[in-house]
View 1 (cartoon, rainbow, N blue to C red):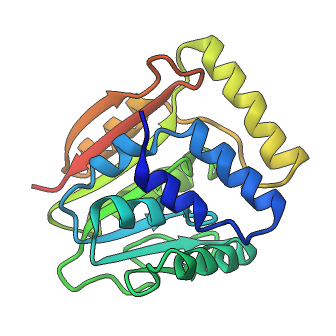
View 2 (cartoon, rainbow, N blue to C red):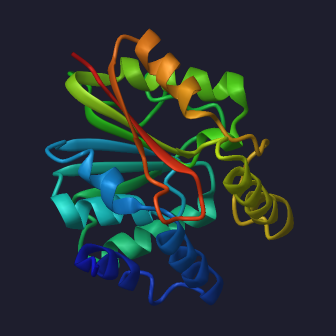
Length: 227
């Protein structure tokens, strides 16, 4: 099925270097952005942690029209591309990007969150690069940074079924260790049950959705809502 918002978002990178365009295209075709964005429907102020080249924040801005979307990223070169893409898409007034350090958590460091908290926080394919301790610390901090009724949306690759997990693990080794497209100290996929347990412990109402039907990667989506 055609996704006009996705096509528009990808076109924003038409002036980017070829390697970036190839990476963005691959990211689009391997990650189910639609359900992730739809989980944030109605969220007016959204923080995207580990935004990379900014594809998901741009897609979200086009698809749902949130008034403020902030992407944070540790890779300065990716942020340069993301800001240029936001300008190209005419979204720079609503979608912005900021550099953060490797230890960033939403509750403790810039960008300054809204006084009442974020309506939505997305963490898309980031936890596996952090290692278990830092990943859970990030989730706890993100839960605290939500406004009442706010949603923490986590998309990762599961550890089951085993054959899909193995394929995904090999691809991520190539991305992080060989091509060095993605920065991270680890390549350790986080089980959906681990994320569910952490968000539940943080006091959120949690739902889980499998996104891998007909897909080679064992994608899952966990949504935690602050009461």
